[in-house]
Length: 269
View 1 (cartoon, rainbow, N blue to C red):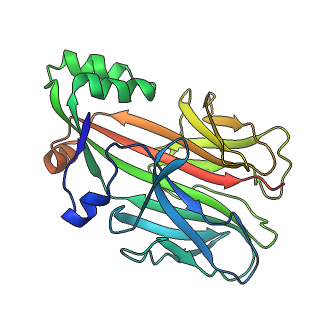
View 2 (cartoon, helix red, strand yellow):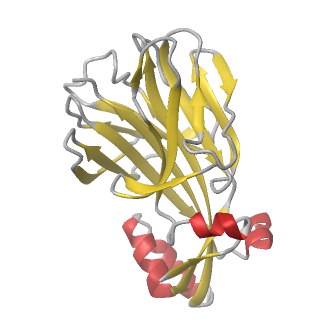
């Protein structure tokens, strides 16, 4: 079992999920005609199904939209749902970005933490926890989210790019304008460099709403290829678990810290 620390007002805590699962930006439409408003929801859950959050719950440090070299700060609207609404100028590939403050989850036992760590290919953390003699009950983990979504405005032409987040998935294929028969290439960056040999989760939602989950890995250059199908939507997710810095320990009593990158996009029919 896991519990959340009340980092925000009680009203916000009531809206928080019981565990720290995937967090992503889910546009109401991944392809938007020129001149229309982009709306997108913040979600937290599993297998591409989750609770919708407001910005008051998913506290943003950064919330921006990028199209080429142009950047627009997003008004995330406090308690509003959907949390993101933007009327972009011009056409092209638009990247929505949302970075949260740290929040905290409490694992009641080491076995609970182990299930999480092992699911993220980080069983080493459990062994290290025992070796360091850390408490095996009431384990605090601080986590932060780094989410992106790709939306095509009009023709959707353009390219995704690195936007300076500590952990970040970058699409090296534009799924709206480039051939996707060989998949969509994504590169995982961590602290400014490609992250090699790392587990990446892929959630593939078909037009009928069914979701298939699978795992792939980055290569020596941090690159992974997502097999895709026309008409499907995708959530790509990667997590790094690490020892917390002294400031994170002081602020959150954390024994561990995790940083989560997500990227959502669709493939046209």
